[in-house]
Image: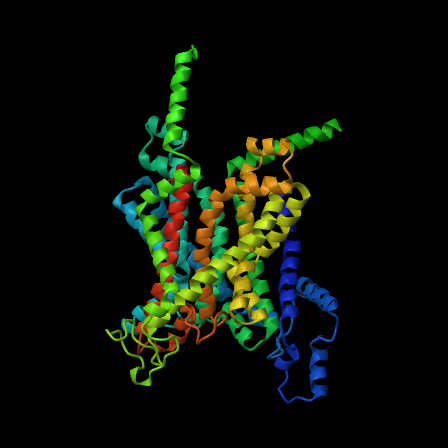
Length: 322
Length: 302
């Protein structure tokens, strides 16, 4: 198992290089000359060439890529912004905590709501609780996030005036963005929990546990939920990916100074290194999350554990034979 | 002690089988019967049908033109004259929402079609040939998937620029890896079936095995996923347009209508309500239909 985890961690290196290659390729195929965005429209040829030289844009593409990768790996250098000539990494790093907090908060809140609802729905299958929960879950996954945010703004900020419409000051300003990012996740996770729980409840070991006289609550939570959690854990990784995307939209709607807003502003001013930096940081964050989810999964799932042990045994045997 | 299998029992079994086959002709038909019994799925289907009809007959349904501006009727609240009210240019929002079906639905379909076409080819190759091809393809998809789809779409749209074609490229490429995985898993699940082996043993070519035997049998989970993917694509199209990275202003795309109406949230909130409701109904119908399809194709899951 340790071998697997180690391998999985080492795999991060090609992933990061791959991500860098993707965003770098996108920067190369983007139409127009980046120098246009650094100097004014009526700059002299000399000024344009000086800017090009300063940004290293006069070098061949592959040299620029190798330098970029080298910079990222050795100095965490994400390049220099076209618009204010500041290091992109610095700009992003003080915005990153906001985005991360927003994403994690919304996933945690979504889990806290969705898990109990999903379990309740499965235990009371086809009851009114189940029907209402599943109907609302379906609504939640069908609502466009940004529109839900607009409706929340309309109700809580414009009409009732009890929650702030923008910025991040104090706990109350987090409520609407977290609700917006979390709404789809609640629906999705509740549906996953319910169907996974339903599958587990029908297993023989649940019947056995009940038959030996174990209390229903113990059976549901100890025997049922612990096993039903596996698909949910597998889903949390994806949920965080979706939420990172949601955070970008939320930051735009609620004017939250995070990586997403920074990126969207950079897109408007055609400041590609900043866009690139934002995507790279969020993608690496997502990869790390997926890595953690994978590791948790292998540790928690006893079936995987035994599989690894079995595989190690056969390998040892093969080694002994050879 | 096990009972002996008597000729009488065999006769009874044969009769059972015959009766069963008389009742149901094919798995597809059985699935269709199950689907028809599911009221929510039927509701989803009817809504979808109505939306498609709306898109086709938009010219007859919409009382005003897409860009018909009327400066005497600016920012009107909903009334009989303007069912959903008017926007800041005096355009009828109902008409624009109706014409919006001509954008969201086809773009959703096209994005999913393209993502499945290219993702499907990759997934099928990976599953069919296995071994090294599978490993290489899956590792490359892993890398692509380490960028969350929404961010990937934003990055592509930022690079290529706005517009319908670029938006379609952005959404198709960003969702392709996930679709490849679905196709791969579906084909892997039937790859080792006896009928594939028998097809191979009589000398069916790889292409024939894949297209004629594997794909039709693996279609169930793929079809369900197609339905959900269209729903997600429509949501992404509107979010991207809301962010200004998709379809630009004068086109009555629901997301860009909401984006344009954003500044009137305090004075004329009605602008912000109806395009969003339209998106939600479309996505809800697709999800209802997809749920029904999943239950009909795989009754065990119910």
